[in-house]
Length: 511
Length: 105
Image (tube, rainbow over all chains, first blue to last red; front, side, top):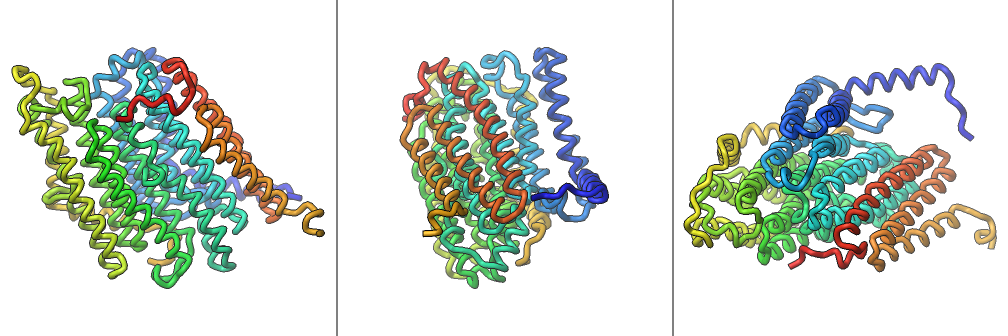
C-alpha cells in the first residue's frame, strides 16, 4: 500500500531535517539543559539545592541568546509542517523562559522546600521539561505536535504539583490535576480524530485550506470543536473546565502554582489563538462567516461564564492561594475576550495582557511565599496586621492586587484597556461583552482589597511580634517588581510595541 | 441492506463512538481513580480506532502515526498516574477520588 522512498527522496528528507534543526536551536539547547540538570543533581547527590537553582536560572538566561538570534530568521514551517517559526512563537519563547526563571527564583525563596523534600533533584529539570513543552505548544502547527507538546506539559505539571510527596494536600492536588487532565486530553484527541476524518490532514494550514475548499458538515465540526475546546479550556482554566484549578492551586507548592497560573495558562492561549485563528475558516470579517460565528458565540459564553463565576465565587474564599485560583479563572475570561476579537488588535491585546499578568501574578505569589515563610499559612485571617511588620511586602502586594483589579496607574489597567478597546473597536455587537468584563472587574475589587484590608487596617492576633526583614535580595526583587508594575502602567509603549510586533501568525489569511 | 452487511467505515465509527461513550460513562460515574483511568484509556482507544479507520479510508499515513503516538503517550500517562495514585493510597489509605477531598470549605 505504501511505497518505500527512493534514495534521492531520503536525501531530500535528511536535508530538510537539517534545515529545520537550524531554526530549532533554543529547543535543543533547553533539552540539553534538562539533561545537564539531571546529571548535575546526580553528581552532587542532591545536596546542593542552591547551586542547582542558580544553574537552572543561568541556563534559562542563556537560552535568551538563542531565542534572540531567531529574530533574524525567516518565518516558516519546519520539519514537514510539524512546527513553525514566527514572531508569535518567538514572543512565547521569551515569555515562557522568563516565567520559568521566576518559578526558579520563587522556589529558592520558598522555605517549605527545605522541610518538605529531601532532594530537590528532578524539580528544576521538570520545570525545564515543562518549559520545553510550552515552547513547543506555542509553535506547534500539526495536530500531532499539539497533542505531544500538551502531554509533555501535562505530565511534568502532574509531578510538579505533587512534589511535596508526604503532604496530603499536594498529593491531592496532583491527583485532581491528573484526573481532569487525562479526561480532557482524551476528549481533545477524539476531537482531533474527527477533524482528521473530515479533512484527511493533520497540518493546521492544510486543514484550514481543506475546510475552506470542500466545506464540511457543521454538526460534526461543532462536535469536534467542542471536544477540542475541552482540552484547551482545561489548560487555560476557563469555566466549565475549571474544576481542577482551586484545589490544585491551593495544594500545589506555591512556586508551581504561580508557574501553572501564568505559563501554563499562556501556553493554552497560544495554542487557542493559533488553532482557532488558523484552522477555522473565516472570511475577511467574522460577521461574514456563519460557521465562524458559531464558535465565536461558544467562546463568548465560556468567557462570560468564567468572568462571572471566577469573580463571584472568589468573594467567599478564605485562603489566599484559592482566592487567586478563582481570580485566575476570571482572568482567563478576560483573555478570552481578546481572542474573540479575531484580529491583530485582539491578538496584541491578549499578548499584552499576558505580559502584565506575568508581572503582577508572579509578584503576588512571591509576596505570598515570603509571608508564608513567616507565618506558615496562606489563610486570610493570618494576614492581619502584617502590613506593619512587613511594610514593603504589604505595599508590594497591594500594588500587585490593584494591578490585578485593573486600576490605574498599573500595568493591569493598560492590559484591560487594550482588551476592552479592541472589543469596542469591533462594533456594537461586542459592547455587551465589554460591559460584563467591566462589571465583574468591579466585583473583583472587593475580594482583592480584603487582603490589604487585613494587612493594614486590622489588628494582628499577636501585636507584640517584632518587625521582620525578609532579606536584602527579597526586598530588592519585590521593589523592582512593584516599580515595574507601575512603570509599565505609565510607560507601556515598549511592551505594547513588542506585543504588536509579535502578533504575526504564520499562515494567517485575514491580516 | 448492503450497507449493513459489507463492512465499511460506518462500522468502525460506530464501534469507536460506543467505546467513547462507555469511556465517558466510566469517567463520569466511577469514583475509583484507577477505574477513571481505565475510562480514559477507552476514550483514547476510541480515538485510535477513528484515526486508523480514517487513515485507511483517506489513504494517508498520518492517522497511523497519530495512533502510534497516542498508544505510547497513554502508557507514559499511566506510569505517572499510577505513581501518583500509589502516593495517594499511602497518605489517604484510599483511591476513591470523592473521599480524597481535604481542601473544600
